[in-house]
Length: 323
Image (cartoon, rainbow, N blue to C red; front, side, top):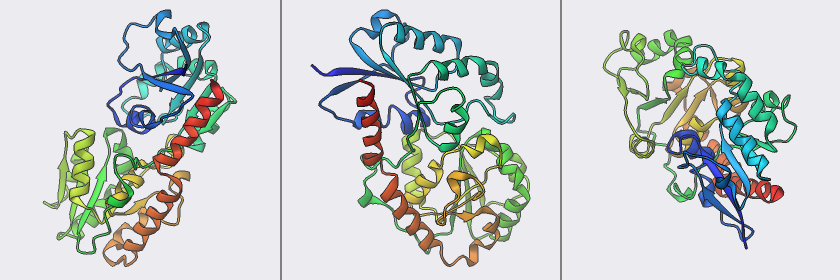
């Protein structure tokens, strides 16, 4: 009989779950264990863990979550936690800062209680390593099951489309380079600068009609729209803060797949790659003749190191190690 591995995402439809739990674990098929989705469970009890060998819990941070971890361990279940952000070092301007700051001690307790912790970056491992010594970096990856390698969009030399995507938590990141962005946007009126996911009024007031804001897309709508938009350049400014030092690079992965050259903060560990262009060179984008090469080198790296079909083998190995 196969052993059972129960997994639980706090929000199984959001982007973090897509990259860490609900969008990756169902692709694992193994003869030694069976994966069971417990994301829909609301009323937990001892009965929830009958017959369960391993419990994978994404992003726990409250007293209630700590109690659930204890319950699983009392039932003899190994507990693996998964985090895609350094919740112990959120920037004060992040919209969720107060929520996580109020629950900081419980988040730390959750990490201490875990038998094993999975994180997306070395920065998070370093931060959490003071609380738990059994931490494994499992990188975010391109989902080549859902988005096949053969369907990768090539760089479009005729495109004049630029993309930024993100949420309100990035206001300070964007406003830090606002003057530079305004200069670039207004200096290239024949280019389209799309900002998806958040409205930056400060930019909107200073830019012309080529500053375009788009809101209200579901995750799959976003992936479809991004492919159709086929940007030649993606921009993703990030402030150099402790939280962003642990930030993963899924924006680079997503936009590379749809044909873009990526401009980011190369001072941050996950963005310090030869195939990522320094965001400070954005004002020279019009003369940037190597954009197609940047996209190609980025994709070669992703295809070699960051395909889900390969990254999931690490998850599979770690699950077996805990059975």
